[in-house]
Length: 622
Image (cartoon, rainbow, N blue to C red; front, side):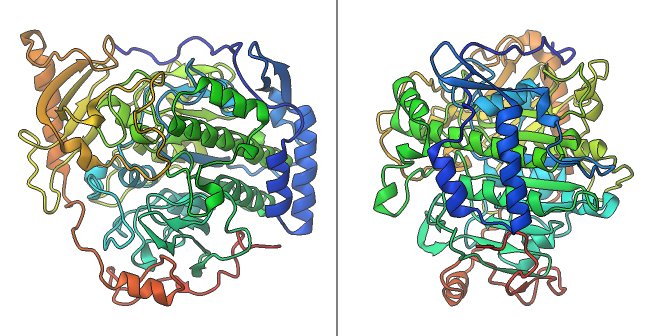
């Protein structure tokens, strides 16, 4: 069984790839073409970047000839005299559709692609049993509320452009608690995807002070058009009073670079002495599509965006065109995270910051995603759909924990109470009917003597879904695990229930377009019941369900399943979509924004108006 949580320290491998001391050409181009801060903030970040590049990263050559970088303890060295708040800062980086075993602390085809993330993970705590949800909307809702999707009525389906539903406005979000209990100022950058038909559902109506990004599940990286309805742009920004379409001159910047730049902009402008910082950096990478509407991007990411040696390495070692685009997008994310960390160090904040990295769901097999040797793909409740890479880095972690692997079972909902405890924001009491499903791992992450607080994990339960006759014993996907065994009722004989090797490319792998791997695709085929011993069979190849030796184990897992089913009180996925949405968007310049601005669901008045967010830190300063 999975006993205690820490394994041996992670050692640097010979194939670790990282950057040389100089900035590459595409970074220089993007830096000078697309970032324009207020003068003081701009000079501060430029000075910090130069200082850190020569000081905080050790540059070596690996056995494959590529330059490598190792994050040293000097990353916490102050570039300026810091203003340290008594509360720590948090940067939560949520990758999109990043499959298990994509970050290079494990040996695979992408080992060389994530030099900085790998080094950051090796200096922190790697979470080897971390689970998100199987698709975007449920995962993001669970992260921000600390509750299972079945507790939220968001267990099935994703928010689409004209969906007349979203995360219940009665739910309390993490930034609201951080603000009210510990005076945090919060920034949301990137993908939202938990509701936008009314202003009440926008990030800055739900605890965030500033937002820039898009509403739907996917977007084009350059044009910011919505791939399913490319006549519409899906990109806006907001402060605590206003929301508006964002149409400044940097709109066409490759989104990973744009989100990087906006994160650096916010860090540079933030007054750390007055308020601790919480940043939710929900990047688009590595979600497809990798192409865009303009001819220059019809073949995906240009080679010029990468170092020549890295581009050559990806082409020669990664199989399949979509997998290569996935690898390129991941490498650009890696360098962008490095720039954000450098900005924190420039403000003297790395000694007082937790950097958390995770994916929202498993990789989509059609879009270059592979999930190691795990069974399943995005959209499925097999391991490959939910088990993802994650780690936490901070100088605040004890030396005994840094560089270790935590094997305790952790769910995306657990970040809510874990971050609250790490922030010192004690005393939060959820309202009646809104109890947390997440548990805090703060103590367990810092000491091997503290037991893992999670005993059971509900993967998901397709139950009480509008317009669907789901029954968890006859036709509905459901899965639950304890520390060793997993009980599941799932469909097989469909593409999302298979194993996909990074050593093989799909037959139609040249398609750069949009694939989604939805939950509905995992409902095809034959319905079957499973029991897996995840200790001895993590890849779910041996079904123990009909072995009488495991009857007691099954009975206990079924008992737990019924406990969770009894808690479900909200119906999921209202079927209603709006016929008024497109008319409203046309009036707003063909930009996807809220279209129900009166007669709000709450019965009250929205705190946000459609106007220019004059106080937004993300306003273009060029």
